[in-house]
Image (cartoon, rainbow, N blue to C red; front, side, top):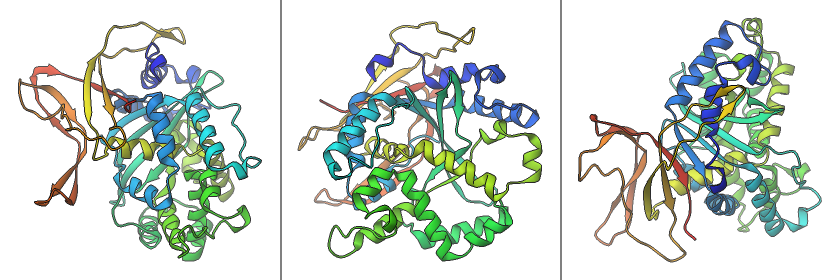
Length: 408
């Protein structure tokens, strides 16, 4: 995505567009609820850490995202977003073509079942942020942004990825029952249906297949009419359980955009099963290319044990951009390049945010894995260290935006 640096960040364009959403947002209905949620979203985007995925990393992440189920499952456990509020974007045209080459490589027998998306967006971005539910549960929301007919569009539903070390379909069902008993977000008829364990399992698998991506399902599952039967890659049927664990980790919930895409009265009335089904189908169609699996791959690489270098790069210049008759807000930021080791190569990890040396400006230190090793150097335990603040505002403030790359 190196050729995109001359353009403003997607998040910056969206922030600017929020000053006149009736003109710049697709399907904006207005009203007090909509205006309040727009202001909330705008504030969150201003504070979000921004990531740009380079084309080189797209190649690497796309390849990694086609790994066997047991590898993907481990990637999902490691793919904890390093910040509680971040925005990640990439060149979608480049990613679509990279995916197409992967499908040609791994799925030539399904060539007639996988269609090249001719009308894909130029760029896609995801606002990823930590959400505390009124039920006491918490998760990361993945909200999709793109442009439709020259207007900004955010999907009304957000995706969720569970990164817990210990998570499966049974735990997902127990958590669903607990949350629904407190919040009762679903229509009564659908709630009763989903509170049956077998129905929950089937619906979760069907939805999970679309979130993970249909081509990946074709690769590791049988034909569409046998979608609940995993191919036995290891002749022991282990992949059946692994794929169900993967599907149990992904689901959808109401996103912020829902508040500005429907009338205020709709929130008072609640949802009908038909309305909710239609919205869900539209969202799953948008992300059926495996967006979430791709992001999981990128984040797991970002948190990978053998990342070798993080090089800070200051912004070279400022460029003024005009969108919808107004200037797009500009930020002074540093690009953080993350390079992966070459095959069989390993060098010392250089910690930019170590806190040593000269006094540091105030900044947010990204979340990361802390590893404990035995006398032989083997990793015995991994602990996730959450995002935190570091440095002093007495020395100024630093905003880090990130350009994710891999080595040649």
